[in-house]
Length: 195
Image 1 (cartoon, rainbow, N blue to C red):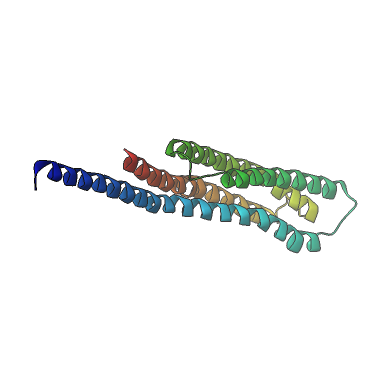
Image 2: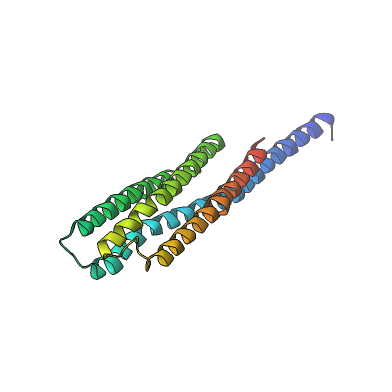
């Protein structure tokens, strides 16, 4: 074997090695990309359930149990509840559509921007939902003829407010941030692979 043949063989091995490395990186990228895709799929399923659940609850619980009364309290409660639930539902639909636009075939920078946008929107949605929850509950109480400011209603109203405050704390302290922090870590692992 002369030197030229060795050089040709060496170059062939070098190109084969580069091709194998490229294929391995591509396979690793697909494996690493599967986790964020699953996470966003689960988030989309949750958002879809959050779209269906209010409709089911209104149809199965609220409509059969509400007694229509010709009073200002009833109509103001129905209007208040309708406005609040429509607003929250509108924001939920926008959130679901925003998740649906997520495309993992784009560049990692674009994916990170969309993930941040989705996270910001989810935080806004949660804030709006919690802010509007109190007027919505007041609307339900007015529709049902439940006295808000009587001695018999102090305990239930206090309990509702405490549960809501606890829910707000848990949601913003752990739930929303933790989900998107894990998603960002998985995307950063993909970025490291590309470097």
